[in-house]
Image 1 (cartoon, rainbow, N blue to C red):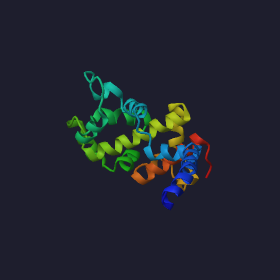
Image 2 (image 1 turned 30 degrees about the vertical axis):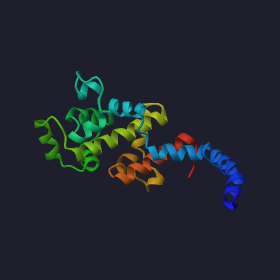
Image 3 (image 1 turned 135 degrees about the vertical axis):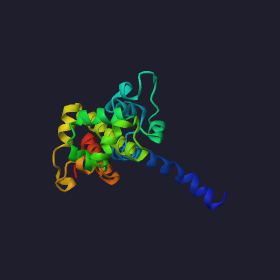
Length: 183
């Protein structure tokens, strides 16, 4: 038997055992969960619920394909439902969506948002759904989103999620809370 085959035969079992023990650790599981960013079917249903559900997407829609909706632009009603739940002020809307009041006024004449704005709205809904899941209550989640946090340099999570990088930091904070990882 060649040397490499002998080495593989002796050490392959221990390497696989080491990999198995590493992937079953809670920290590894949290890393995998953080990488998926909470986009499973249950989280997607929570995101759609935060956006107003079937009422916003149309009563005739049996199942909402969130990816397809994002590509063509989500309904303006979905944004209205999220803004109402969060109690957003016009200044918060300006910062969060990166659009002016005049642009938001023009939305009244349209039925759908553009894909870029839709992405920012769904990002906000995803963080709200994740916070609701972690904190087990939508009222607590909204309160947490409005509290300044030292880990975000005194910003509120709602202010931080105006960028993709900020949304990832907020999601990571929520996962740390979920799994009891202190930083």
